[in-house]
Image 1 (tube, rainbow, N blue to C red):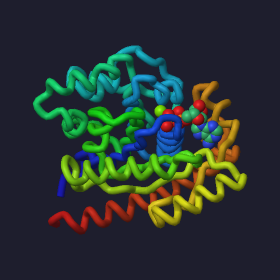
Image 2: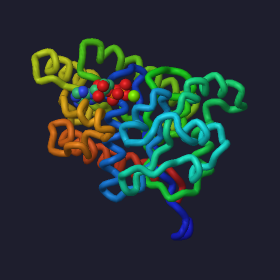
Image 3: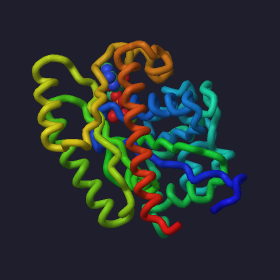
Length: 272
Ligand code: ADP
Ligand code: MG
């Protein structure tokens, strides 16, 4: 076993859905803030050239090195990351350069592995890496899913949610069959749920199709999420007692339990 002083291998979670506007960034930022508040050393990676996760943590978009430089290997983690106003929570911020990275990576000898490689070289003590994926297919989310131990799928509770999720699961299965056979689906998180009839029906459809993959906790539609975004804060830190704030806390507890189960399974598969 490694000496006690060596940093532990971080647990990497990708927050993914090829659809935009489903709550990926809101979920990634809130989860990162909760884990850090609970004592974990967290790195949030903003892989979306829109930079919403960056501003959600109160950091400037498109300024200084960040996830782009880290992925192409021009800056090591300790140069590329930033502190945030939250203890133990660091950020690899987004820049407009990310928008062209997809194309640049095609020149790379192993374009799917750039992020995994960069994280593998990092020696900083980190417990959790959370990756906020852009709403697309292509090399950026593939890099996130190749670097990840597990994936969390936020799904907005609306009419086409079910079809979107079927597509996302298809992409995930392809990825597991090719570049990352060890990737686990941590779970599906229902977001922006309304309590009206349609919301309930959709929840039932999702639970019937995806069964235990769907987390018990659900994030309600809550205007406080928008107010938190305007204040450049994750909703859990802006108002932990808001309906969405409470729901994210409940979701985080469930996510940590599932993570522990996956880690135990992984440890059993590895030789002692
Ligand atoms: P994505 O990263 O998947 O594109 P976002 O997290 O940016 O999705 O959310 C899309 C929009 O919906 C944002 O304007 C966000 O503020 C809003 N939103 C997210 N979750 C909620 C919620 N639970 N209640 C109300 N609005 C939400
Ligand atoms: Mg986003």
